[in-house]
Image (cartoon, rainbow, N blue to C red; front, side, top):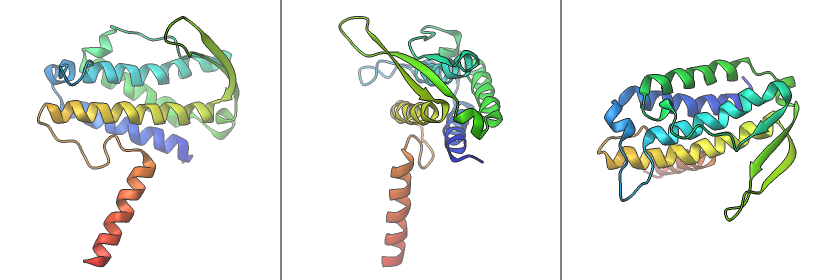
Length: 177
């Protein structure tokens, strides 16, 4: 399997496994004052970043500004699971030629006014971006899960390089024990 596809699937699988362990109340709960978004809102954001790619690939134009704030996926576990499953199926269909496809992306870049940048990219680079962005949100979800007195699996919300570092440290500690 192509490494970037495998990495994206690993993170989506982490999200899928987490959703299988939650109930609707936990999924929708906002752990204020520590957090301002629910697990469901973070999951929606993760899915949206993938969906804009999936939906934009036919015309090779990806607009990251398109978000579904307030969508059903934020409050319905079954919808979130179904949408993650859709993304898994799509990722499994991606081949190397598709990864190398040239695309144009657009994304807002300023806070004080509406200002977007349009740049050239390719699907490979954008999957690298959304995987990294997804991991960032998974880390925030991990905080929300722990604030609800639940556990997360090892490596949940960790960047791949951090997971490698942890494995290396465990090996060093095992050898030194």
